[in-house]
Length: 353
Image (tube, rainbow, N blue to C red; front, top):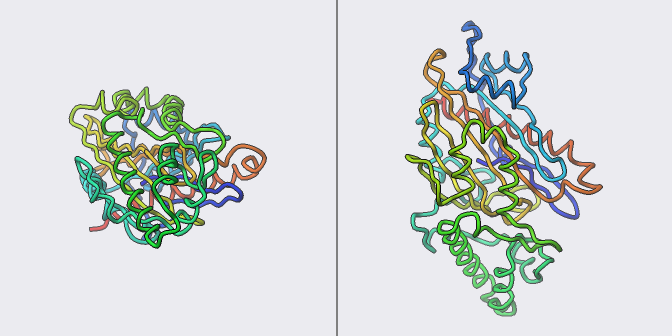
């Protein structure tokens, strides 16, 4: 799951996708086992990049989730680290991710659908336009729209939808499904170069550039996972041998407005763990780009299970300027709370018999 912050121009709100799921049950502790050395690469990351304190390390060793804000450009980006020990096979988490329609459902997840290979129009049959989006589309123009869309999509909507007809809603949703199919088909063939250039504001936003810039600000990705970094930037070229990937779309309720988003999940088995990268390709509101990187690190000295390590980074409008300066602290605090909730529910779900 991607757990970034949502807000809206002309007013803001904060909510985390994680907060949509309420974790139950206590964290599984390891009292009496004593602190053991962590796997060397994980220990190095915690020291150089996450910069955990001695107290946080002790908390992690005791089986409790730990979170930490990471360095990021405060005017556009939020980054948060989290980790927890999960006493369950790593394969259980991988299986849950592959069954994404069940893993991310209920509560404020209004719809989740895994996209087929190859994608088909039927994959988007459940896609509906929220009432506010339908209303906004009537007046959307290039450079002035409440929905994040590219210029070609905006022009097609203006040209092909007759809002005076009683079939306007159905026609608009049919076009939205076709646009979504074209978008993912283009991405699968051409990679990041085919990602949207949003024209919802006065200045265009190049999603591919925002994603690449965000990756460049992740030196730890280059240091620890160079092959994954290349795969994220160069898709569909330079994919890691033995990796699996799939796309899915989702509509989720985030405070003021439901948001439709499309994600690309890549699962990379490695000799010393499993990497699961979830890359946001599109979001109808609030986001330019986002990446959730999860690493499942085995620790045989600790027993069956794995260290669940997650790094979430998201880029959004709304953090710059006077208003953005006022809310940044709150945004970062809510991001950390969201990560904590994600760790707890992941641990609870996977450890459940």
